[in-house]
Amino acid sequence: MAASRDEVVERIAAFTIETQSWGYVSTGTRFKVFNTPGTPRTVHEKVDDAALVHSLTGVTPTVALHIPWDRTDYAALAKYAAEQGVRIGSISPNLFQDDDYHHGSFTNPDPAIRRKAVEASVECVGIMRETGSTQMSMWVADGTNYPGQGDFRRRRHWLLESLREVYQALDPDMSMLLEYKLFEPGFYHTDIADWGQSLLLCQELGDRAKVLVDLGHHALGVNIEHIVATLLDRDRLGGFDLNGKRYADDDLMVGSTNPYELFLIMAEIAAAANDDNAVVAGGAREVLFKIDQCAMVEEKLPAMLRSVEACQIAYAKALLIDREALLRAQTAGDVVGANSIVDSAFQTDVRPLLARARERLGARTDPLRAYLDSEAPARRAAERVGTPAGW
Ligand code: LRH
Ligand code: MN
Ligand code: MN
Image 1 (tube, protein in one colour):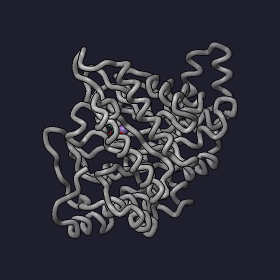
Image 2 (image 1 turned 120 degrees about the vertical axis):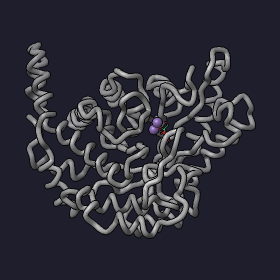
Image 3 (image 1 turned 45 degrees about the horizontal axis):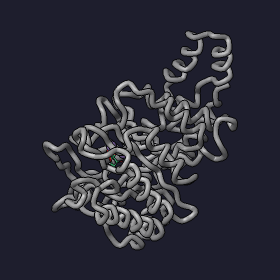
């Protein structure tokens, strides 16, 4: 049976999504960064925007930070966030923006640079303690552009050694989510190129190291839902960086061009959450759903609201798949029937269910409309004069 409408409402109300500080500022492309009025100038204003999104949607209680983009007095920021009604979520060390990382961070041939990268990451563990964060979201930007530029196995040993030191610095209630990326900034190879590379490293690190799946970090045509199912089955799915992909790491609004893919990914989550045999204890419930999108020409707050809704729509539709009928069709070899069952859940308009979930949460039934009709856009634009914060 599919979940009843009431169950869907309940589960959508309980389904939380993390927004990210860099999604509230102007990021753009390498050709031009366009600003929009009301862009935050400080990390506190980024938190204000995250809090506004949470008050409108009721489902985004945490905001992810990147260090040093968000360098500040962290204990004070955590207190400030709590006063605004949100918490600090995952923390990411930036191992890519210093000149020292010209030839890599954890895999740099220079041991002093590797040490610097480890120390920058261990500093993030301290920030996690100060802010109450329990998840380190780790992306290693290392890679090469040309054959011969680096020694794969030597680099792998350095990578593992560095990651191990950071992992061991985590408190017992903290976890490391290890992201992979097919290309960029390295175009010949990246040191953690795919889920297999990431999984192997996680297995070598320990149980609290899990794979983070960024929806934009795959080649076109890769079946991401199959990767998700496999990781769920091994209890190694740490979470998602959610965004929309047309070509690669486009960081567009979630589900904007590929809503079916997002739905099929959520279908794996919904199925695993229902099926104790498929998930090692607690697995599905611990998955982090983090938005990782960048504003190129779009207004950031509306874009974030669209993305949150896209996640909710995909999850609600996934919950509507009639699992028993699907199992019967699969068992009977009814290919078209099985596919129709999945598709008919996707075709359902779940927006009325989302509105009911928001009512239950005391949020706005149409968050985007409520934001656009409020005084917030004009107030933010009037108050936030001066230089906007960078990433
Ligand atoms: C890398 C990435 C990673 C970073 C973020 C800014 O492409 O997806 O998650 O932390 O972008
Ligand atoms: Mn990412
Ligand atoms: Mn990315």
